[in-house]
Length: 228
Length: 106
Image 1 (cartoon, rainbow over the protein chains, first blue to last red):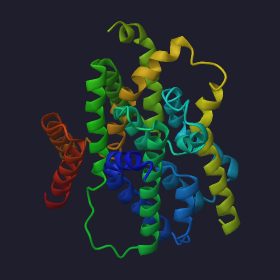
Image 2: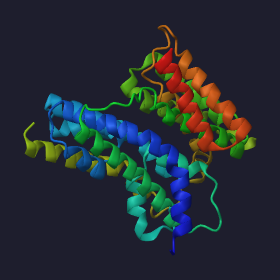
Image 3: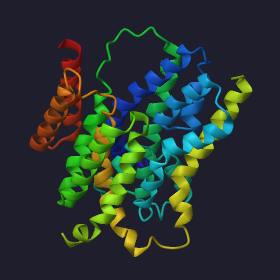
Image 4: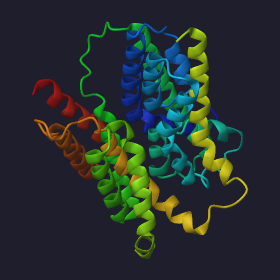
């Protein structure tokens, strides 16, 4: 097969996300049908929205019969952080041609994390490698959510704690980032911003507050960052 | 919500979600990222990766028993595994199993 190498590499890299997404997606599907919404909304939302936090929040919108304007504004805030992801991918995505819209659409926290951390193998056709990585991740989310919604509450396996695989993924990616950068300041900024936000902000607003704070600090330490 | 309203709500969320992701690509399609922002391209991934670790723990209450000890132990275990073995699949698998054991059996 022509793109065998790209598919294989993308699959291997995406396995940790498989563990996290299938479980979280499953939880989303379960939660959705527990409020008596039809099961097929789970695959529909995973296909067209494809944003973990937003899909969970969406269930609250449905329950509260929220107005469309409220939904639009709240969705924007929930996903605002993702606007910053693109900033560091402008160059990488430049030569991705027709695949670009899908690559941008599929830019979740985890996909972004893998794209920016894993070292590029020079032999790979980048754009196809990015495409398969993104598509595998969405497939896991889609399948998890659909199964969760169909299976309902007949789960036997005790999955408590399996969601930690996403924490573990980010821990490992942090270490890899450090190996690339060898500069502790961004990590210190991330840690301090997170702790401040965790202490003073409700958990549903934690991420956007943390990112804003971190950006301010990054600007503040710009000179020192560039000097090292 | 009626089923029509559900579909409209989903369409709105899909659109807004895509707009948040596509925004920088549209905004910087014609011009280059200003030099003053180039450091963001370089240092933001490391910062956000750190933040995401905390983000996954946002619903853990560190002021109540057991004070997030299990999560910290899981992170420590995962990090040590990764520093020693340098295989990220093994680190994540074993780290997760270690944490699941803590949550399910302690």
